[in-house]
Structure formats: C-alpha cells, structure tokens
Image 1: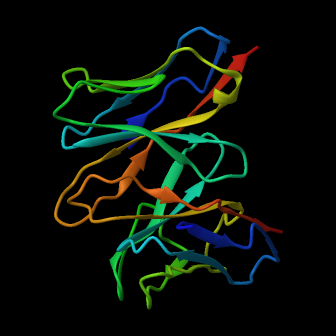
Image 2 (image 1 turned 180 degrees about the vertical axis):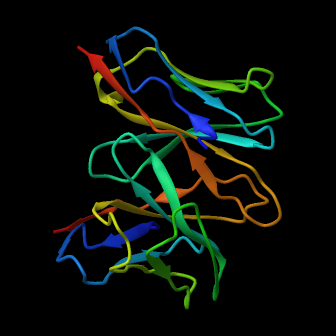
Length: 114
Length: 114
C-alpha cells in the first residue's frame, strides 16, 4: 500500500533537547512538506522540498531544520531554539506541482515538550 | 497575514440536512483550491478540489463552489451524515515557478447530529 509513514505517533522530550521526527513515503512523489497544527490556527508550513538535496523555508521555519538526502525521506528536527515546540506535526507529499495534485498526509506526530 | 480564512470555527447540522462550510481568500493568484477532512489525531484526507477556471465541482454528496469575484469558496455536503463530523480545512495554492505549496485556513469543526 502506498502512503506516508510518520513515526513515532507520540513523542515526549525535555525542554532544551533536539528531537527528530521521521517521515517516509513510498508514493514516488518528488515534493514533501512539513506542517504544524495548533488549535485555532490551521496548518502552517514549516519546510518543503521539491527535489532531493534541496529544500526551502516555509512560513514558520525558525527553530526547525530538515534534510532531503533521499526521495523517500524528509526528516524534521525540532531544535531547542524553537520556542513553542509542543504541537501536532504533519508530513505530506505531492506529485509534480505543474500537475494539480493534492497533498497526501501522514497521520502525524504529537510532540510534547516539558 | 491570513490569506485563507474560515470565519466559522464550528457548525452543527441535523443528519440528512445540508452542511455549508465557507472559506474566503485574499490572494488573486490562487489557481487551485482544495477541501480536506480531518479526524482527531489523524492526518487530513483530501476531499475535493476545484481549479480557478471552474465555478463548481461535484463528487457524490460533496460539491465545491468557487466565486472568484468575491474570493469565496464553499463546500456543500448533502445529505449530511454523522460520519461527516470532523474538522474541515480549505486550502489554496498559488502556483509560481516550481512550487505547489498549499496555504490552509484555520478549519471548521462540523458536527452532524443523528
């Protein structure tokens, strides 16, 4: 079955620690995205990547970093510099942007930092 | 600057009746609009989309209407079913260059009462 796998589903960290969220897709999609969901604010774009070894900042990239070494994988690191890291993180992928295709989402990782 | 707005945080309708979810946008460069449905602790799932060259798209019980002059988008669900109870996000894309990233509204929580 093709899809997007995010792991783990729940993650707990102490303040000051970096943490990496995993995202893997087997849809053969070129583009991958990280969004963050907070209550009442919808989904906000953190980083996106249109192709391997290339990525761009989204609207709220501060305190986050990504890598795209493989087409299938787009891990997100939440660093200690992120002031409000507790949130629900969603990874997505899509086909070529010139073809109007929807984003496909994983089931998310709930990160709690205390 | 919220480019995509869903001004109603919640909506409650009776089973069998019509549900109308609304969305407004400000960017006239948006060329593709989508609706997503989301259950708690899961990723959003794609529901229906519409290109900016159309004013209506229908898929079973779901119809999306686009009024470009008013920069307004709506999703009609007829008849509404209890399983439709979820958070609904509208999203829009401004295709420029090689990026197809989506901008999301804040979401509307729909409750369909049996």
